[in-house]
Length: 579
Image 1 (spheres, rainbow, N blue to C red):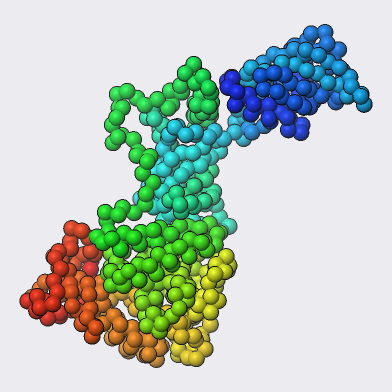
Image 2: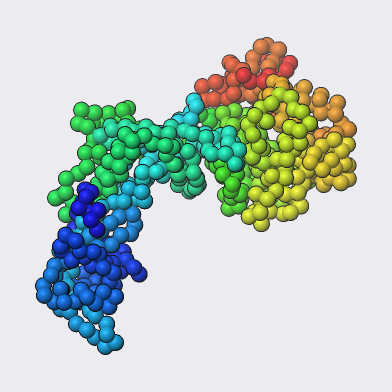
């Protein structure tokens, strides 16, 4: 135990801390006894009993030669290691030594009042206790998010990030091929006294807690310099010292760590330090309607699922069920409010916005066939995840404006990549899964993928999913073209009737009309407005005025106009793609 002499240590005296040390020493092979003289070795013994505030019972059978020295009054330490630390008790003295039946040698001594502790640099991980706050800002390229530092070691740390950081983390996962090391990011730690420390790191693992709305992110530091190594060790020791102070019954007698004392000159200035209480993701204020705000949790779920898939995980069955149930409920409350909410999702990543829109419109059209509610829920769930296999492809492939034959085959593999990731979603109907997630890219003329199925080889839901998916995709920007307005989409779908089921295409257009709810339209008077309601004939019956061709926001939406007042605006002359 010479290391205790050579390195700095700290002392723990609280009942809890002393009991924790003794618990470690009572583990098999955990305790040794070292006589108090310069060249004494630590001899293996067994700590049998520890009576708090009373006595310890030691078994010296494995080191019987210690008995004479202890009987003569020699003082000794109890030493051991565990939980990343080396421990040494205060000097103790035997009260009684005896040999019992079977030749077992026992010794009794007083219960120690304190232990001296040395943390092992290579293994110790200092935990920030309740009441100890430090922030960690993760930066990659032009993105950065701030979370809470939860623990720190010489080799890495654990950070609780807001769910909103999921796109940045998943993008980093996507940049790296499975056989390569993770992409680097920069971590900046900020302590209450405004001490800052910056170091490069790599992602090691992520665990998502949807209830707490956080991502627990494990990071490994990349080749720290000698100076960074020294600073890290100082931070680790200060964190542990402050944590020990928090757990001591007589904490007032311990000096607080300067690292966790706010600087007086900046006290109360919330602009200088990150607000660690904020772990929410998207800001509800960015969404102009109640229904749009209620879809935030669905978007966050998809963000997290993309991250989980890129980290090697599966689709979360329970959360998928919960999100599908949420969309069903919103649809039952007001289908047109839900449809309009889709136009308020412009801030979402493309894959997220597309997945939500396909799930909602697929449900809306499928309901015209009077589906049972359980089947409708499965349809929504499969619509939400139908495209997530693309998260497992390289970003360069998804951004490429033109694909060669090899790249096209790679793109088509997203369907097969998704299938095994649904293994835990046993509540989903196999038929619905097959048709919505596996047949959504097939075409009735056999020109689709991945299997080139034709005509009656496709199920009814598969035929419908192909129509809904294609129409929504054409309304979004792509690497090789700008988004198309709805009238051009309808014309293109009509021109490709041999590829799509004409019955479902007709039903789609009859249900949503020439100008679906959520379409931005221009009247011949020049007025712009968002379609909010259609009458039974599919004609526009209510609009909400706007002055700009931008996605809906609280600031851009004007008054509602309906019924006879619509005629004052003139006739609708075109659908407009918002900038």
